[in-house]
Length: 450
Image (cartoon, rainbow, N blue to C red; front, side):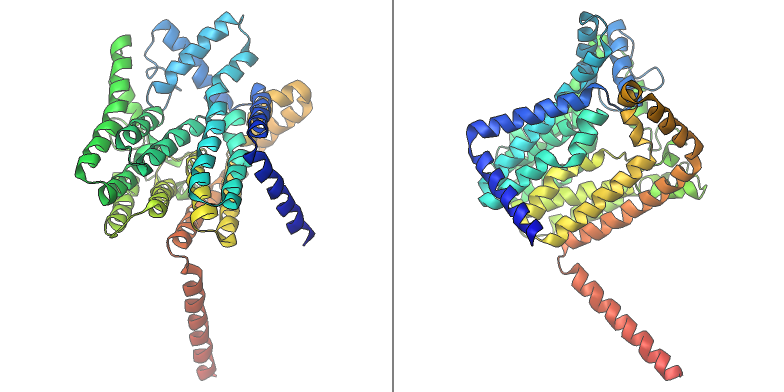
């Protein structure tokens, strides 16, 4: 009871802060300072190396998709890598400052995303629930972990996708298409939400708006990519090989499918089954998204609530089955999950399930050597601990590989359970009833045999 009172007291204080403009700005400024500090001596060394080398290659005019260990998405983010490298040279080769500069858009992306989601919640829900949504958008640990600490750009893709969603809700299809196109141009994954946008547009606005949406969402990433390749006069074939490196196009790398993806594919890797050359299995996600599309298109009416849930469903199905899903993709779903389970479907059970799913994501992430993102900081302040961390990962590689495999399988299973619960709130009640009947049947047969 005392804990509940403390939570309620904290919530009351937050509501007061969120409603006071100066306090609100001070709060966001405080989070900016916090994330800036977290960004300085942390980061995934592989990803930061790719960002840094991309800046070098851009400066030298080298095709950024030609060398090994290159950028894995369209060239929009590469432009910021180029700017950051120029600032690095200007700063006197200060790598710590470069680490902060390269992560700066990611930090701003999180804060702007929290603000935009908070404003949406304020317009659609009561003060209590909208304050909760803003609170979790600001303080949920995964935003800090993936953004300023890791250095991945998912806060930006999540922001652009949410802006597209918000624009379409307000019947501003062209603006929504612009934001969705930019999200796809930044990181291709938001493309999987396009069916949800199509369904909502068809059910609420009509075929002409669908044409606007499709033209905008497809032409913008194509236009940006073509412009970049034309200006630098690069061979686009290397980019296409990168985009399709987990699908049966060109000479796809057969080892990609077994590199600890955050779903059941990592478990398949434990079984020493190489399914990478069996291309139908690698496209399993496509028919599942097709089934989801049919499910939503058959509904007579798709309102704001269903629009949010449809985006969640497409993202979750993709995350559970695609052959190359990294941990940070989970961040892209979080804004829509908070909107849904704290706004449209307020149940403690849903929040509890989200906590469990986040925990499973962290288990996989830690098994996938994620703690090494703190290595730069540890080598500065506690070298012996940094050395121990490196030694632990090298000595326990097989154990971590097994944990990664089983936790990936657990993520897939739990995603389906979570999604079933969101789509059908009576899922657990019907499941328990069926289990109860099954148990009664087993007991009755057992008694008859006796």
